[in-house]
Length: 457
Image (cartoon, rainbow, N blue to C red; front, side, top):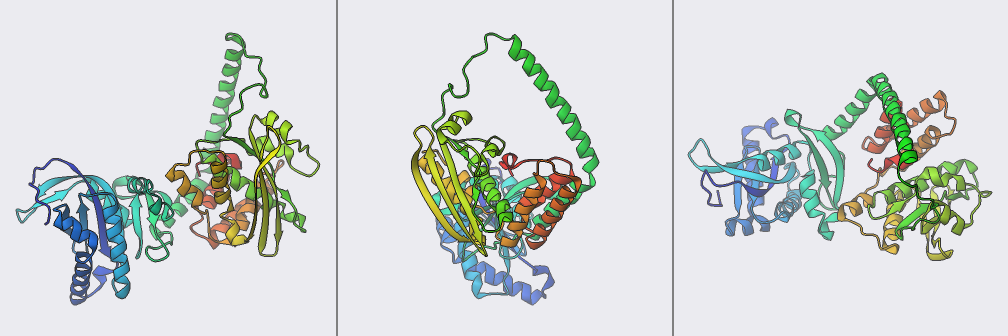
């Protein structure tokens, strides 16, 4: 015990690092003792441990197969300690660790040895977060990730995994921390099982889901009728047209990208990139983004492309247009950002990528556009833009093909079955492809969402 606390000290916020040795209980007693001694030695030698201990701002809680370290310094301390420990255990392959971080209240207690100790939500939640991981994982609660996300140096290493149910039915949002040197980029098995179970439950409840959809549709129709009556019977309605209303400076429409591939069947790929750009831009709260439904009329070489008129019709100040050409395993994307008021080019960019690398283009474009329009980009938004839905190019192509089949104007039952089959193939190739799981789940419940509705997914 390092920090001097009495058993009745007031609640304080502790920044907790909880860790344990994976497979500890399977070893012989001598092996367990050797692993524990090695872990204790490594932890005690870390800079963060020494600094906090010297300052009297650290409490150590042994847990048998690991430990909890409660730092009363700053939110970065447990993460920096976790990084130091992860780097050191590389020299001991038999020492497999998983770690969890959370910041929360702790209070004083007296343990069975009549010594002052701490307990509380801060400790418990750190353990729950850790329990979601496998060997090598450094998992963070959403609260810790948001605090660290305020610092640019951590943003690119924070990867959201979504919500997961833990002990006592509590749901927590978990974030995976990893770099090229430390951490584990793989989706934890527990979270993967939870996502699969969620899809299975959704499929088994498809009929109630459809009833809910019908009831919801009825409510929407009723609301529309009431809203229409109020509009007709309220005080004078403005006679301004969309073109006459003030156009926000930070507004944009992404026109359908032209497919220049030799194989015209690759149109699904151009549409998919447009959808991803729209979805990424919609995550930026400071931007007004026109939906895909509104811009689809400008698809095709024969569609009217007078950008000033399009800007006026859609009520936006800027337009993104461009083309996509796929040849073999490579993709060539050309885009131009245009000021719709005067048809002036603001910037143009050309991307020559492999299909795998092209998965991240939408995030790059969204950040470029945000910068050009001087839109505020919160750290959490930046992190989401830099997060790829999958790193598997084949799974990504299957996902885009599924979207194409699902969103066809006159999609038949056969089209929806084919789309579901493609989603399943995509998740088989990449079991961490959460977006494909979600789309398959929605498809099975009879809910059809367009790419415009994927903002929060």
